Image (cartoon, rainbow, N blue to C red; front, side):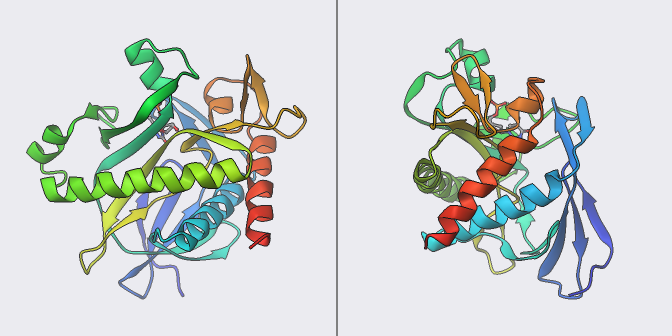
Length: 251
Ligand code: TMP
């Protein structure tokens, strides 16, 4: 497969065309950002870690019946994916209070939620990805009512499967962001990435010497280490990768 013209440059990935109109080429970047790009850093090795982690997670989800846009990983930093028409939505699922949920609603970080929460954010850099509800999304033409129903069902199923997957490697899935799109034949699929950049992952092991960064009584294994200036993300991301590789090897 050949890499053709650049189609899109995001904060953490570049997207290229290929000679197959149904297949795109994704290149992961070393760049880490927070606060919608307000904080920015190059972290050598991050691209390879996130490419591998996303591939392993999408492969695990496929094993339990959740298909994604992933075709295959083709190099340490690159993968081929199905071309999709993306919904301009960040789809967030929460199991434990943290981040913007804790701040907005005054709930202490770490509080177990009585039921998972599904949120939508409108992907718009000039507007800073505002929080929206279903009516906003339909009114703005971001997705139809029927598409939102499918998106919500799929997001909740992914949350259930992903929570179990992470639990099996001693990690608590606090919350995560996913994106979805529609294939040329009208199928709504999981797309983009699932990595420690896009999830809050808390270590359930208490060893303290496994890459997790202690922050009060939370052992962080995700990008909050970068967002909160707690140190290097690399040992934590390596730890997540190592546990996912061990899980894959166990099948
Ligand atoms: P939040 O608490 O900041 O709203 O984030 C919720 C989850 O979504 C958290 O796991 C981080 C992830 N996330 C992204 O991946 N990209 C984003 O732009 C934002 C705001 C959150």
